[in-house]
Amino acid sequence: MSLMPVLFLVVALITTVVLFGDEATGGPVQASLILAAAFAAVFALTHGHSWKELEDHVIETLGDVMKPVLILLFIGALIGIWILSGIVPAIIVWGLKLLSPSIFLFTACVIAAIVSLATGSSWSTAGTIGVALIGIGQAMGIDLGMTAGAIISGAYFGDKLSPFSETTNLASSMAGSDLFEHIKHMLYTTTPALVITLILFLIIGFFGDYGAYDAGRIEIITGAIKARFNTDIYMLIPPVLTIGIMVKRVPAIPAILFGIIIGVIFALIFQSGIMAEGSHSQQLSPALIKLKTCLQTAASGFKSSTSIKEVDNLLNKGGMAAMLNTIWLIISAMFFAGIMDGSGMMGSIAEGILKGVRGTGNLIAATLGTALLTNILASEQYLSIVITGRMYREAYQQQNLKNKNLSRALEDGGTITSPLVPWNTCGAFMASTLGVPTFSYLPYAFLNILTPLVSLVYGYTGFTIEKNDTEDLSD
Image (cartoon, rainbow, N blue to C red; front, side, top):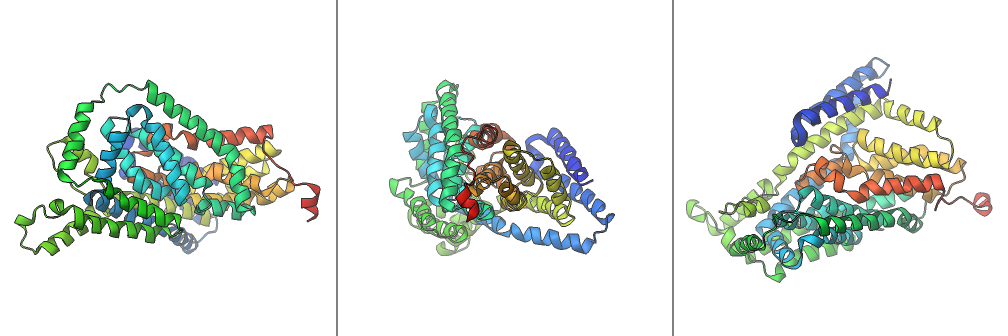
């Protein structure tokens, strides 16, 4: 009975994607999620639950995603302001000077991994350096799905292994394992996955077809950007400072707001030409014109109008309004998740899975599968870690397995797979921030696909699966 709404949702989503393709998340997927939630609510209401009870769970579930929604809005403003201030254009210009197409995907993955490892945030990595890397790849004519896949692979490698990451701390806490023991244990699954990922990007890079790459055209693009923006090396100071304060453990929202403020300051100081554009048609003082430009860019994004299409495509991005479709998607997903959780159907499905688990390999497989399923149904990586961790902690203890085995499986199945689900908060964020549909980058998010598979192999072979010894049990 509990699986019926899930099957309904799967059929509805498959139909929606077939009918609408990449445009599915522009409204049809949201409608499918709400319809599936209504279908689930009918089941719940006919089995003893009240609407008030279900509604309370929906409101509580929506409360869990208010922080991601705020981050989405602020990231949208940050992207617009960083383009206006010349920060993103400067990174694009310097990246095009220093990188070649053959090593770009490899380099993008490494850069994203380093930034995410330092900051502990895949979201901040994608919203800052990731946007610039997308621009560089786009100018080089590299498939946007590949570029986004490289960025996401690197971002989630760092996110998993950083002691500053919220999911890393949450997974170790839910499993009852030491944080640094948890991180060291994850190296066994994440490092091989990253090595294979980098090799694949090198192969794609060296054997890719770059017939469309035109060095002369690149010069025209960089020349057009430099003609409008100041792209001197000191324009790279704001991202360095913003990443620096994230490393110092400043929370995400204040750090992003700092990035916006310093972006506005740099726009006022170094991009006076762009800030004054259109002033002749406005009966406002220069100060008010600049204020209007900043507010408009933060709200609606940067609007580029040059004679070069590639430049306009690179720079027409950002703004809080650009994130509203993603927020709509998240709210629709949370409606479905709230109904499923409040009615007890999600718990019933989980219990059914647990009953059939026998042996270490099957337990690891069930943990990975449940975390992935929760990412799909609950649409939130934190809920995936919490729900799965609560379910399986006792089972790991009964099989005499160390807690770090559970915490690693929670990350390998929960954190890592979250950006692969279009209506999950992470999938929606990555698609919206990078401007690439989830299904376009999914085949190239190699690390996110490989890590659960490596973890699954370890579960069945017993490699790195550690058991409690007698002293641990007596303690």
